[in-house]
Image (cartoon, rainbow, N blue to C red; front, side, top):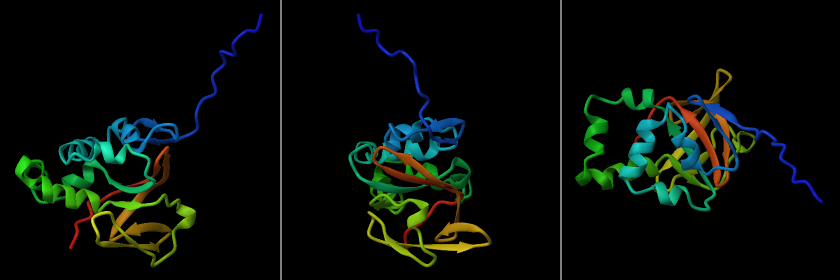
Length: 159
């Protein structure tokens, strides 16, 4: 008689917003576990992007925290979440997404990446930290089954 191996090996991951982000989950599944990304998750759902960002990708997502959304002028988030603003919300959110999976080892100072929205974002390394369009990357290399996520401290606004 063969006994099934019931031992469990804990999956390695990165803690974000009180939850372990693991490579076996997709970008959206990981983000949904983070208490620091409830605004982003609500916005992704309102824009109808949850299915896309749960797809095969790969994607690199620059994920603003709730505190990043709170830095926007009063009423901005509520306004963007209105059904009639879905197009604008989609533009803002897709400006945070790049096709392909970029790990921190792939980043170069001054590198420009074209977002899914069509605009360009620029990466910079200064004072021992990485920045994207002036937003500080606070957590890098959150690896998911369909890409990588970088936690950022500001919302990126397309030009």
